Amino acid sequence: MNITEKILILNNLNGVGSATIRHAYDFFGDFENTELKDILRFIQLMKKISIKTHAVEDAVRKTERTLKDCRTSDIDVVSFLDETYPGSFSMLANKPPLLYIKGNRKVLDQKKMVALIGTRNPTKEGERSAYDFGFFLAQNQVAVLSGLALGCDAKGHVGALSGEGITIAVLPSGINNIYPEANFQLSQTILDSGGTLISEYAPNEKAENFKFVARDRLQASLAKSLLVIETDIVGGTMHTVNFAKELQKTIGVVKYEEMSAKQRRGNRVLLEHEDYITIEVSTKEDLYGLF
Image (cartoon, rainbow, N blue to C red):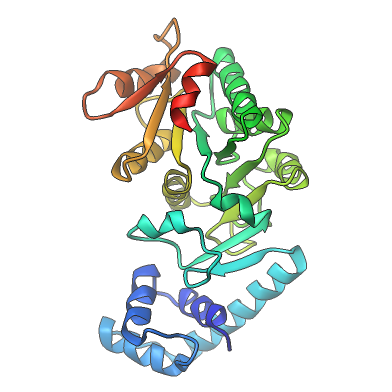
């Protein structure tokens, strides 16, 4: 049993999360030469819980199914102990113990990467901005990262593809269960164009509410900076912004001539509130401050 299989089994046990797995690794300092039964014994003592034999057997079966799905779908499984695990996630207190990656893994280490984010219901001008800025970034050899959502995310991905650049989609679901379904073809175009799909969830897992917030932290961590196209005061975009703020990432915010639209209330807050240090983006040239 290799290291990744052990981590998968642990991750498939109820009550065993990323922090517990990292604590166990810190204790042993080596999962390769540590028996799974010894890791489980340590976790039970540390958390004062009982892990039943049938629970371990279920976790092993689930792990076997996951690995089979990954082989069938050409998905790489990367643990936090692998050399290819993105270094940008090291700053996360709750970094995922496992990542599922399909496509060009090398682009995840690209230094010039901007997360282009925004509402699922943008204005027509917001849609054009997402596309145009995605195109411009791609033309300047900047990888465009987003969440494959409808609206600003999708327009940013499409703009980057039109600019013959690289784009990365961070998913709130498994890679074999694209969310939203309407963007399935877009996900395939991203792969066909040398881009990447990445998730912390097993290939066939469905999207759930809590997974969207978890996805937002990965976007903020992976990208060098953020570009907010349009956002209301609450929602996923603001979650990503707040994660980026904690990580001291540069935050670009689009400023329009007319800022009264509901979809831009968050833009106004970010540009005017002293708690946020942002770069005002009105023209394509302003994007140079993000990469």
